[in-house]
Length: 449
Image (cartoon, rainbow, N blue to C red; front, side, top):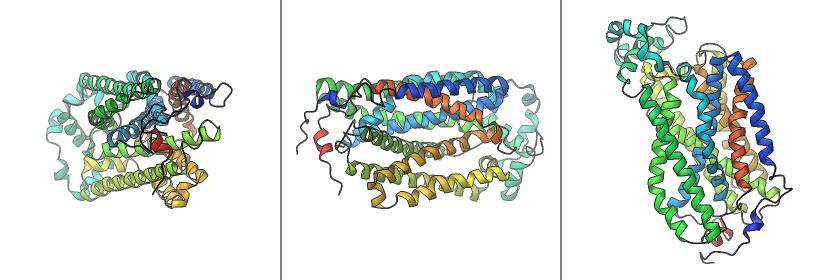
C-alpha cells in the first residue's frame, strides 16, 4: 500500500468517558499527593536525606522523559514508517515536559547539601588549605596501588584531609570555572529551555497534523530532527554531568553521558511497550499496533539493553585498569561495604542478565505477555539503577539504610505521580494514534522481516 494517508476516525482513538484510562490521571495524582506528603515529612525530619532522595526521584523522571524524546527523534531522523502508529505513546510522555522545571524547584534550596563544591569557593577551610592542596600528590604520582588506597583512606576513618581529599581539592580548583553558582544556574536554565522547545515542538507539530492532515508537518519535523538531536545529546550529557556526576566533583568519566543516554533509551522502549499494551487491553486500539510492531520494539529494547551493558562494563573496565584515584572513587563508594556490594551485583544481574535471557528469543519478543513483563521489569530495574547512581552520596560509607527508604519511595511517588498526571490528562485530549501522519498506512500494514 502507498504512503497516502489512511482515513481514520480520530474520535475512535480518543479515550472515551468511562474508560479505565480516562481516570488514570486521578490515580497518578493520588500517588503524587501521597508521595508529596511523605517527601514533605522527610524534608522536615531528615532534610539531608530528603535532598538526595528527591534528586533520585527527579533523575528518574528526567531519564524517562529524555528517553521518550530520543524515541521520537529517531523516527523523524530516519523517516520511519513502521512506527507511525506507536509513536504517539512516546509523544504523550514528551508532553509532560511542562512539569520538569517545577519538579526541579525543590532541589534549588538543597544544592548546598547535594554538591560538595557548592560552598567550596566560600569555605575558609578550603582557602586555608590552599598551600597544602597545591602540594598534594597528583593522580599519576599516587601510583596504581596507592590510588586504590587513597580513595578509601581518610573518608572511611572520618578524616577530612586524607590523600584523596587533598587530590579532590586540587581537582576542584581546576574545575572552578565550570562548577560555580552562576554558570551552574545558567546551564540549568538552558537545559530546561531546550527541553521545553523540544517537547512542545515534537508534540505540538504531531497533534497539529491530526487536525489538518497537512504533510508539511512531517516535513517540518524531519527538518528540525538533526538540530534537535544535537541539542538533545548535548543537554542530556551536560545535565548528567551537572546533576549526577558532580555529586562526586573530583570524579572523571567521559562515558557517563553515554551511560545516561543508554539507560534512558531502554526506559523509553519499555514505556512505549507498556502504554500500547495497556491501550490494547482496554480496547482503545486494535490491529494498528500489532505483533510485528512489538517484535521491533522488543528488538530495540533488547539492543539498547545490550548497549547499556557494554557501555557500563567498558567504563568500569577502563577505570579499574587505570586505577586513577579520581576515577576509582565512584566504584569504591559502591563496593567498600557489603550492602553496597550486594546492590552493585543486583544492578548487573537483575537489570542485564535476567532480562537478557528473558527476551533474547524471537518468540519472547512476539509474545505480548512475556514482552510486557520484561518491559515492566526493566522499568523497575531503572528505579534500582537510579538509586545506585544517587544514594551512595548520602553518608556513602554507612550501610544502606532500608528502614529509611520510605523517603526515597515517597520522593519517587511524588515526582513520577506529578509527571504522569500531566501526561495522562493530556492523553485524554488527543488521539492515541497519529491519525494525520501520511505514513500511517505503511505502519498499519507493517510486516516484520
